[in-house]
Image (cartoon, rainbow, N blue to C red; front, side, top):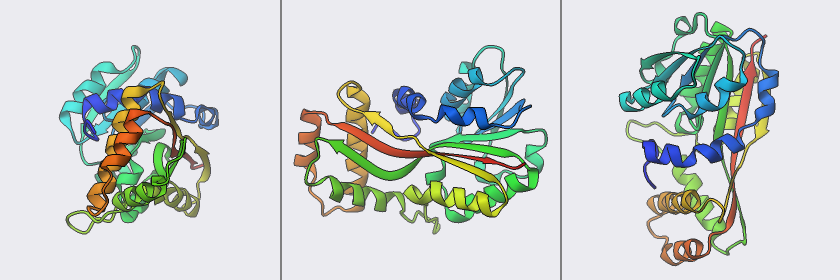
Length: 255
């Protein structure tokens, strides 16, 4: 894969992200939101998708620990939107940081956090009474057309990799993240809406589909070095399948 957080990979996936997100959740957002904080903003694709669908004026606080990505995101936000940047680890967010913020957003972030980190983030949002729209969290479900006998084996190994324990004992939530976050928000008293938002890949998106397949099988092989997936990957790349790659959007509103 081009790199999980590389500008090239983020640009390649942006159209699929935009097509997958649950646009109907925007109508459920509380009225009067003027300040939005985007966690792990990357190159700002979520802001480019969401800002034109919200009323003006808007202030976006782009939050990421990568200064290179912050610079790109700030430069590419839609005209008429005021932009601030905040270089930090998103897990260090406090309720004081959210003074005046009406909405916290993120895209493809929750599955990279631990259970404790999600619980802490939910607690901060509950204390600040700030609503959250968390989009495109991986669910681990992949459906191919045509199917291959080894699909389930690769999916299982990939999902094990997504739940891996990193250096320092951080156990990632991976595909458990959206359900875990929804339950944590409900426990904290929020009204929660969840939507299935799968990527739809296939021959009509050849570059993205091929790059995703390489990354998906690569993660499976990293988790299970005993798996010989060369023939599998070659088959899949030689005739790109249609693939529905599971994600979910979670909207939590503190009323």
